[in-house]
Image 1 (spheres, rainbow, N blue to C red):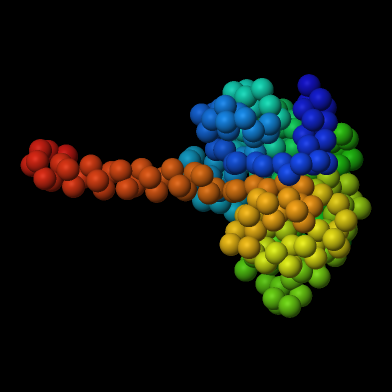
Image 2 (cartoon, rainbow, N blue to C red; image 1 turned 45 degrees about the vertical axis):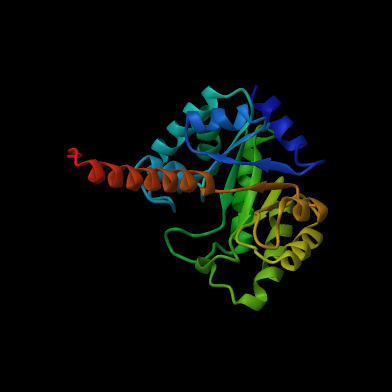
Length: 254
């Protein structure tokens, strides 16, 4: 079953733009499927926050993968997991845990959460190659490139070229797709799509609506914790409105 779902997910990277609204629990994942989307992607930031932890591998990996397993059991479609940088797990163990949780794909980022900055590109490529060797065809690997994030500490004029260099290395190492997160310029993203020459994951933004992403050949688009945060904002606004109503009528809200 893992190979079949991974094969379906892999195939969806070649054709129309694959749109991935990110989920964080069983209910949000079920809503994604009910809305007609063919894949559920998780957001590490949203999952960690819902579990009471911070993003950036601050949540215990067992809790994160337990949440993934609950999501995968709740939906019939492939689930691709934001596995951050892999939580320090060796490639064989990481793959085994992802497959045991029911994942068909994963994001692996090149931020070094322990030392800071980015993992050297060649070192990250070797790690991706080891993950690919352990997974075979059972996982779709989306290699996140963090050169555009402040943590990457890459000078702005060099970010696009470095993203292309890393993208080529990661694809050669066996990644199915690369994800230059944080790109806001259509020109920069188009250079990356052209330079890498393979599937690229994008994000929407002021210059990057779904039509623009599709027209430049982006393979997939994800939204990170956007929907989770929107839900929390709606809750916050609703509670504030309720408090005003409580104070207006003078009833207890203790």
